[in-house]
Amino acid sequence: MPARSNDLALPTDTEPAIALRGIVKDFPLKRGAAVRALDRLDLEIAHGEFVAILGPSGCGKSTVLRLAAGLEQPTEGEVLVEGRSPAELIRAHRLGVAFQEHALLPWATARNNVALPFRVAGREVDRERVDALLELVGLAGFEDARPRQLSGGMRQRVAIARALALEPDVLLLDEPFGALDAVTRRRMNLELARIWMEQRITTLLVTHDVDEAVLLADRVVVMTGRPGRVLHVQQVEMPHPRGGEVTRDPEFHALVDRLTGMLDDPEPVAATS
Amino acid sequence: MSRVPGAALAPSRGLAAGGVLALLVLVEIVGRLGLAGPGWPPLTDVFGYVAKPSAQQLLGRALTATATAALAGFLLGGVVALLVAVLSALVPATGPGLERLAAVVHAVPLIALGPLLITTAGREATPTLVAALAAGFAVFVAATSALGSANDAQRDVFTVLGAGRASTLLRLQLPAGLPLIVDGLTLAAPAAVLGAVIGEWFGARRGIGVLLVSSMQNVQTDQLWAAALTAAAISLLAYVLLVALRGAVNRRFQ
Image: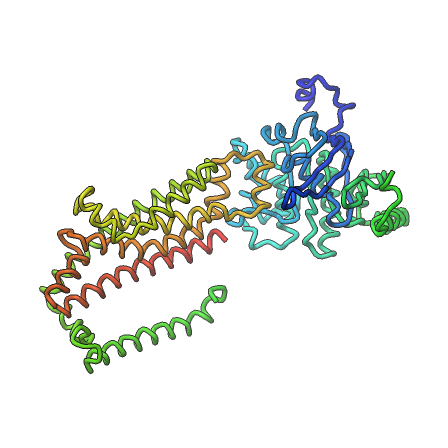
């Protein structure tokens, strides 16, 4: 990775891993009208940082992730991932992504689903890495199972293993546990915390679950909707690794309550600043 | 219904067999009583005709010719249709134009194409070509919608992984669309048989279509019915085989 930074002649420690600057995103409606999803949004994520974007549904938080993933183009402003456009990173197969819908290939086994990024990139499948990833996400022994034979939580684990397959520079997670029940979700949060401790990849997580955001992230960005803006940025000081005991910590609950309060407030004063 | 194998399938099969039997009995009664005139013989007379060795030889030759033309047309039409659908997936700009072309070709009645093909492609090739046209359109329509059947999240994953068009086609669109493509083949198979018979109608040397025309002109009612039933039997057989294939594909790819 240092080699790539040298190519760009940019020192790694000053250039953020993900930079969104002055982002405006309009979605066209019928008859030439447009709805503004994001309005002058700025966000920088440092290398190896885990940032969670928290916000009510429809606040444009998924749009932020889709911009970073190169799936949407900003109307105004600049999106840089590792100092380059997302399209360049996509071409270099340096992005990993997981959505709320697991989007696994139903005809392929867990192993072949995790091997997909290798095949798509035209590289030889690293079977050892694929099996190691399945073990990392706790699916050793399920290598030959097809998605239909796996539970919802297990499918999301496969999707996360797939996102990690090519050792991406940046991991983008859009509500990856949004379709799971509360108990499974909590267990998956703790799993992701453990996996992230082993990989330390720059991660952008989009969620509407305050507990999930505080449990996992170094920094929580609270967004307000219509148009989407950054309402508040909360540093989470609790040290990693964070296990189940963190959720019983009073500091954790105080933080969750504060952030939940911000989501509840329909017309936050800070949004106009 | 197909989600609950065994339990729901057994009575529905029994019902289907009962229905077919009831229909055969009805056809026999109408023929026996002469309710529909001399053109509708009792089924037992038709079977009696088919039991004759000379009739079997005649029908056998016709059956071979028609089945060969239908199969060749089915394969030709299917392969061309799949290639065109793949082309429109790889080069999206060509999509709307190719779809319109297919619709225009399909809008020309096969009956009108028959004489045209006889004069250009010849009597030997016409049944195969008409079968190919009939089957090809069904496969093309199914394949174009099949290649668009992958869901948005799967497409997004492929985009972010940096998959090219060919790779997306091979690893996502084709496997995701296979059940729909097989659905198209299921419709295309009887269409190919019908196309082959129509193609023979215009002056092929042998085949069920020829047999139909000559039986009709010579008022050989039993032979006419035997030929029609043979054509229906091939059509049905092709359909049953493809339904079995569809079951296997659905189990594997959904």
